[in-house]
Image (cartoon, rainbow, N blue to C red; front, side, top):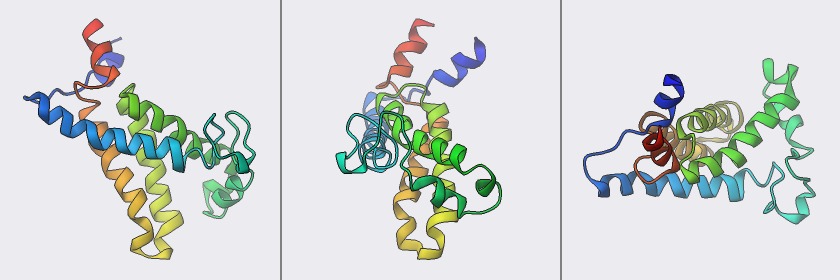
Length: 159
């Protein structure tokens, strides 16, 4: 119970407007992850219709892309494709809501590090920028939590 409370309770900044400044990138990144990046490879109600994805289904091409990273990714491409797509699509929802922010920020951060170093690095620094942005925001929210404007704050007040 103490561990859950520690993971859920956000750090509240001294002034409410500072928490607003923390909330803005959390909302933007959560929205972009779930509506665009994640929905393109993981079946959600708002996934593009031309992707032909069922609910919670991973795009057929994604495990093949993951296997090309080599190493452990080649051994378990379906698992890592599912985890990456899930962390973007569902993690974006949780980031947007400020619910279990630290846990999903960790998943998003790991996914972004894989995207940066195993997928985009060879294409040049410019192509790493979206993943770097999501990675930085998830790093901050992993440390600070959702702030006072997230569901984590409401839950921690009840506990």
